[in-house]
Image (cartoon, rainbow, N blue to C red; front, side, top):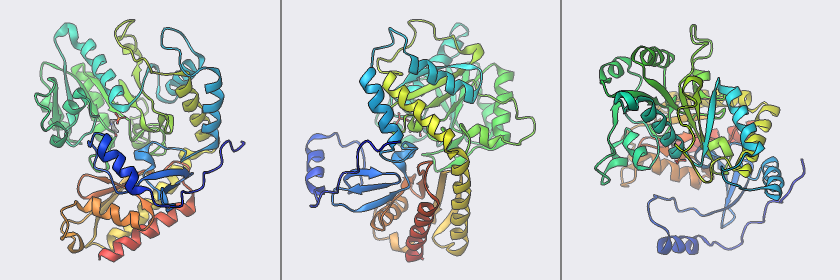
Length: 427
Ligand SMILES: *Cc1c(COP(=O)(O)O)cnc(C)c1O
């Protein structure tokens, strides 16, 4: 594969302040940003505008699944851009059809709708549920406490975290939250208006909490019994991150009686385009035609450009056996993190996760963090940045590792030893 664009040289002077100035004057301040302005990257490394290098263990919140500036992605982008970038969904284009077939082949009999983000993918599934229950007057969707489903109005109504809803009331009606991994609570929460259940296979923003196999199988049986649709939000935990294409495939691997398990709908985004924005949902066969012509649309959904990139990513993942590699490396890293929890119990409370979706929970009241208002997760992340590694806070106590699927063994080793250094400095 030929290199299309060489890595640009780092800028010599520190332009951070001037970049931040542009933001404070012109960009809506809805994000809590770190004091870092990034300029370019290559593989699992990114560089800031001062030229400092960081090992990127967050990959744009589980987006850059092949790392930064991957030559195959650059080539697919350039080749497709020369042919067609966008034509609208008034017409057929081959890349969209091919990508849909590739996704269906990896999940099960069904169809795909393409959109541009995770929130939008979930919105689409909510519309599938509304349509499914409409004639019986059923519309309510049950989601989990601590879940995350996006920042649109329906997204925050679906999300089981109060902080995302605050000041945006009244909430869109039709969502209720039930404690996660608690099948009885879910059964008890079902009302005559309930039409669907949506859960993440591994809660991401909620602190890297995997669903149990019994929970998934129990929800499937419950949904069958009560004629509810079972939706999974695979936006963060999908696309091979757990070592299988979708997290339910990994969680249910080798579990007896799980061979035929499928949800009724599944949302995707984040890693799907490897950094090129795109989202999608899969909907299982008996429900795949519920959204007929004129019922749902997205101008940018499934452009030939986005689909060409996504097809190339699937090809690279397969050819380079990245799912198996992610799994192996993830298992190795999890063991190392668990070991840290044993050696430094005053700093690390717990380590958990599946594949390359890992969480390390910090103890409450770490003395070194007492002098700052910032959460332990943010303060730990700051120290990691100083050490040259990007990690992502989840909640107030957990840091998340969501590296690219093609992270190399020595890079994983570098990340773990830097984490250990920071942990040690806090002990
Ligand atoms: C990130 C995320 C979303 C929202 O995706 P956007 O592309 O930001 O709209 C939804 N669900 C989960 C589980 C996510 O992690």
